[in-house]
Image (cartoon, rainbow, N blue to C red; front, side, top):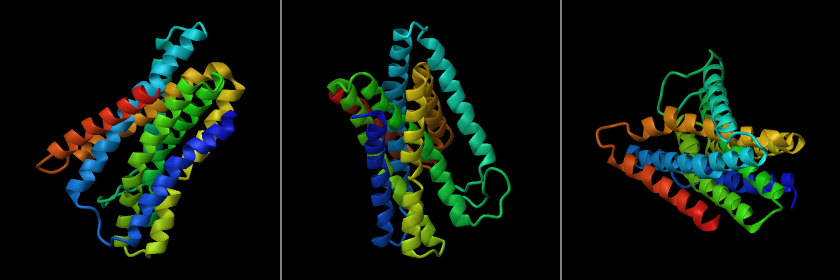
Length: 263
């Protein structure tokens, strides 16, 4: 299996899970209850924290040392660049988080539905990068069972948390008065950036091998920015935040077990 094929197949599963989640708009008309939504957000945060640590930063350090570079340098530098990239996108790209009235980013005349889709699309970028790089790393290591299993674990973990994410975009769009069919398509398309960015980073990593540790850390930093800026705060809204806290721990444990057991 080559890197492009692996990245394509690996990022296809999270995209399909986003699509399945978006399909919930055909079965439910109302938005998820706030308590349920907090649980899903917390779970996603836990998965992404564990994926950043075991699936991205640890391999970045190991790759750096194999290249004769101090492990902390690409890990810290790439992480910081990933945070800055997402921070810049958050400031520049117009987007609207479900449940909020005022959009973020630069002023725009785009419809609320488009702005809501862009909010989720922005967060799917580092997830696609992470999965694509994991499969590229497996191919570079001779497609060994260990590295390929680790990449599959990352794809599985990201895919699981993408299911409620798809529903979290299509259901609010339906409530905005958009048809169920269009809400489904827009929710599904919010995940299309995952295979796109997954393939792009593989092309870059394949052409310049020393960039792999930096790209892995970059994806980790971008994911952690999403976790700290959006997921954890939103998972703890309201009076009773125990559900959000516990779901963070459950997501973290699940992703950690998947990576260690399969890797």
